[in-house]
Image (cartoon, rainbow, N blue to C red; front, side, top):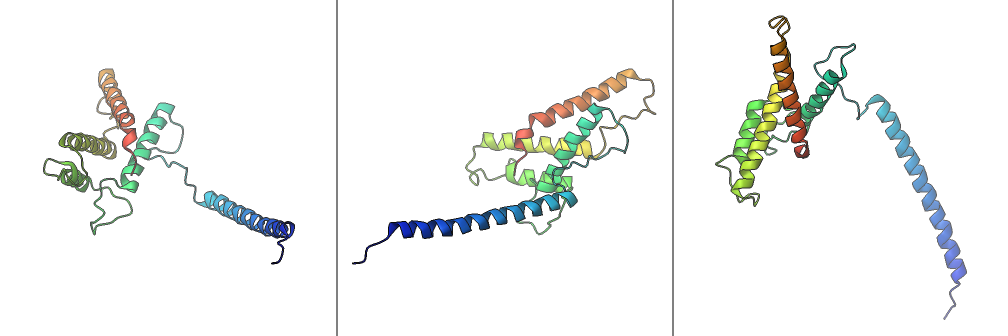
Length: 182
């Protein structure tokens, strides 16, 4: 029986490992360069805030619209209220009536409880949460956040009431933020 030269085996292993490490490093650098170039032309972390004109705005206004823009991107892009078995697929889903139908079908009173293994109480809670999210979405999309300064000129009470309503909707949005996953 021939004797195995462990030094030779280890040397061969080390040299092959170095080449594999070099290839992995080159592959990582190419991938990183590709991602860097792609991010320049197609930034993924940029928020294009809706309903804001170019120019200067108060930070509270920017914050409100940024939060609702992220929320609307979630609703329209992630499509949590779309039946994936449906043939009506769209890139951005904005039909509020279809969203409500989806929630009624899967979480409403007539929804099958056994499908998810949830209790009726859990289904009712999920139903209320989903309907509230659709209500918040509809409130923002329909422009109810806007204050009509011409109609209510010099009415500090109406403006204070409107600001309170916007604050309430922001609080609701933040309260349900842990449900924004698909």
